Image (cartoon, rainbow over all chains, first blue to last red):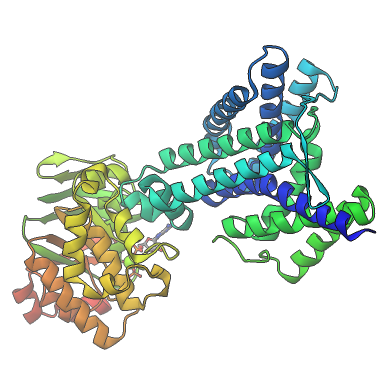
Length: 287
Length: 234
Ligand SMILES: Nc1ncnc2c1ncn2[C@@H]1O[C@H](COP(=O)(O)OP(=O)(O)OP(=O)(O)O)[C@@H](O)[C@H]1O
Ligand SMILES: [Mg+2]
């Protein structure tokens, strides 16, 4: 194996890790605050991908505008998921909550299959491949990584510099105490779900420029995202970023050395071993 | 200022407060004492809206606020320093205080109110960039009180502020609560340190198995068998 190929794969791993981190952060934020795991989270990403796909191919929208529309659309979907599905079952047993969001997953998958069949659809963008020090890097991936970083920076600033962002973190630590400060938990949950939706929509826009979309898109990225969240420590934002990079490196570098399938196997093995050794995740629960 | 009239409340089938009537006048400091499990915390939670009432009425300055939710009641001017402090451990001291002033009306006065809190508790100013969870128990209690002051409340509810503190710290804390009083705040306080709290407040109530048993001016109560009753029950 040529070192240059491994270096290229390592860089691609980092680039993929950026988008995965975006997903893991969205899911983790919702879990940390609302205390519910959105099993159907990656299905929202899929809808974001379809949104961009159709706006660009059928309606000839410019890509940036279609991406913004997808973010807006999935933000609204996030709010609806919270209001229609999550809010009514907030005090139900966790199993029922899993069943409800799991049911949504099957609903969205079937819905997409019904509307758009199982075809794999891709934008076929003519984005350039850049040559850097003899490595070939896709511009689409670099773009997706840069936008992911910006979005994460934006989220970080929101969570640390604004009243609502700080309240979101406070609610994840003590819901009742935050009510005593005058914050309506229902409103905080809604804002959190909207942010989670926006992150999913953005991830969708960034993934459709690299991958094709199909109704079962979530089958590949869903388990990976959950694995990352658990590995980083559920609710732990910093852990989610670290775990994203770790997992995407394993998949990317492992994929070039062996095969993609083998790399996923290795990733799952690492996951299982890590969870046995540190059940609360590499960096512990809820940062 | 605060009136509770025939309040009954509890959890599920269980009734923790029976027909409780209590008043706190503006500028007063009033204590509620009683043995473990008497319902003191429940009483505080009823006032701040965390536990709904079944019968009776709650009034603040003559206006009923029964049925209001906790986040609305803060806006009416009641700040609750809960049992066990309940600070946000992974937020900094300053962020905790910011959350105390979360209400839009309080945000406008943030610089001024936070300045007053730091004057009252200088140690919080020193530690303002530190995570609240790293503070000592006494400092955490100061933070919990300071956080409550950030909403500029008319009435402060203090639920066992001395809980779990070393004796020296308890004395200092009572001194600080006295200073909060002198700033003109109206206070309703639950305490296990009956003797000390009686020296701080104007009046006190003895709560026992969910019922008010004795009520009176603290000077009179200190002479009676009140302290023993508060611990042992009648
Ligand atoms: N969440 C709850 N669910 C059910 N019962 C409760 C709950 N909280 C308190 N109780 C019960 O209500 C009664 C009063 O409890 P409360 O906490 O108000 O007493 P307290 O006077 O504050 O006691 P302590 O001195 O131990 O703090 C107790 O019998 C307690 O077991
Ligand atoms: Mg109590």
